[in-house]
Image (tube, rainbow, N blue to C red):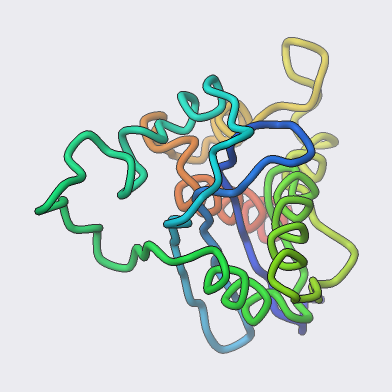
Length: 192
């Protein structure tokens, strides 16, 4: 049996792991029975007041965020095709519309949905995705076992264990992580 409700594979890059973290990059892949659409967004007005520098470094924030790259200036580098830089209020509206009624799939998607729920509520919106989230790292545990540290494997280790190709250089970008979560999900659901 396959899902009839939409699936939204998503990932966020944030200013930290703390409860009041802010999302600075988001990618969503919305899959229905008939369509697949992708959106990748930078939050143009991200609040960095409570940011953790290590978290920003992990996601290469200062190299990748269009408003904070060293090349930002009077003639900033254009964003890649299909990538947007939008105000947080607009991002929140897009998230609410894309995730409404959908099942969220990702790598520890509760981390992402906590940040997204806070963003939506800051802008007077209500999260309306399905309450049962799907974590590909947990899904894979019975198939691949525990990681070498005695914990579930992260995305990169999981992809390697399942022989799913990925580029290490792209990890910790929202789009690459969402796409890898989708490939792992499809591998586990289709090939098992």
